[in-house]
Length: 58
Image 1 (cartoon, rainbow, N blue to C red):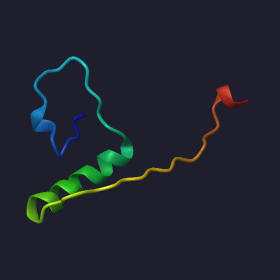
Image 2: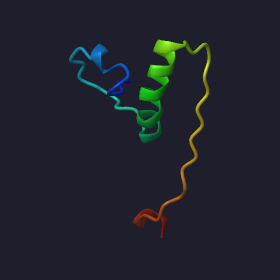
Image 3: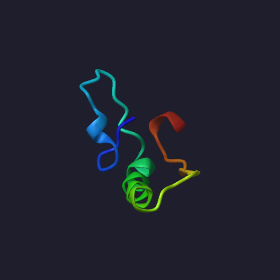
Image 4: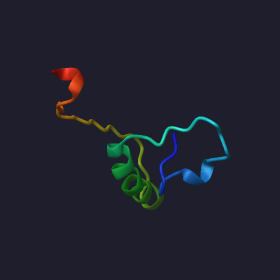
């Protein structure tokens, strides 16, 4: 998984790429700054998404 602003420099032209989730994309740059300056030993992230109306849910 590659996140711009966090580890995208590790991308080496792979054919299949996951650009993470919107929550990961928001958290990763901040976590990188904290890790680079202070270190992160362990972390946990929880995401809760609301149900959205789609044609499949009718």
